Image (cartoon, rainbow, N blue to C red; front, side):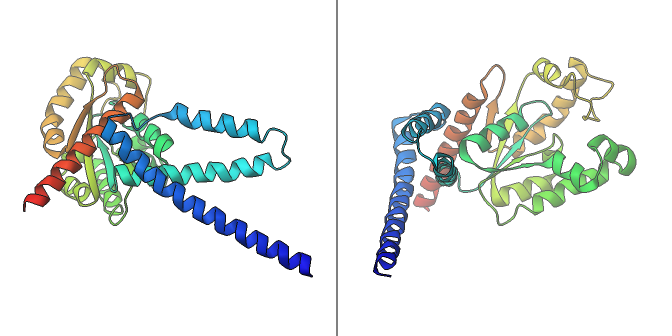
Amino acid sequence: MDKLEKLRNDLDLCDEILINTLRMRSQMIQEFISCKQELGIAAVQSEEEERKKRNFNKKLADYEYRDAIMGVYDSILYYSKRIQSHELFGFNIFLIGFMGVGKSTVAKALKQVFAMDVIEMDQIIAEQNSMSISEIFDLRGEQYFRDEETNLLKSCRGKHDQIISCGGGVAMRQVNVDEMRKSGKIVLLTADPATILDRVQDSHDRPLLENNKTVEHITDLMEKRNPAYMAAADIIVNTDGKDVYRICEEIISKVKACKDAESAGQAQE
């Protein structure tokens, strides 16, 4: 019995050490991201995570419970990313722009780097209605689809650290812009019409472009939408010819500048 009690006490001590270590690590993550920003070092460094994992795998190579320990470590990394995203953002990021500018690709990259929750608006609306976007347009009409977009944006209230990849027409409604501003920053992604055509050429789930995929048609639609896009945007990032992680870094840098400007304005009031 004495031996069992000693083991229990040792386990309690070990748990206490783990908790204190995790608290210390969380604090260091906060300081780490702040230091990166002060030094102008890129926040997105995906190779660093791979380096750490390789080192841990080497140290645990012959250990019976290697997979279990690595599973715990993966969980620690995941929540460390969540801490970083909260330090960098602390609110939702709404990606707007014309179809094909890279909203879904950027959203996936931010999810990978910062473990942020991603809401793909078109995908969710399609799943909720058990039909494709094209079918919704054909069977229920564009007005129904636009109302679904607005309702989905309203559901983001009270939440934070999400990436919402918006459909191309979301920013055309002022009520949508108002909803987005209640819980986050609006990031406009842009690209040249020729770039967009190349990206959407093989897609058949874009009703407004189907059967009319030309640079001229895309240019015309973009010119009609650009005033609303520009009026809605807090931040603008061009995606032409850029690696997705460079785009993410630009978003982070401009979000920080936006937050700093807001803080300076509040300090003056």
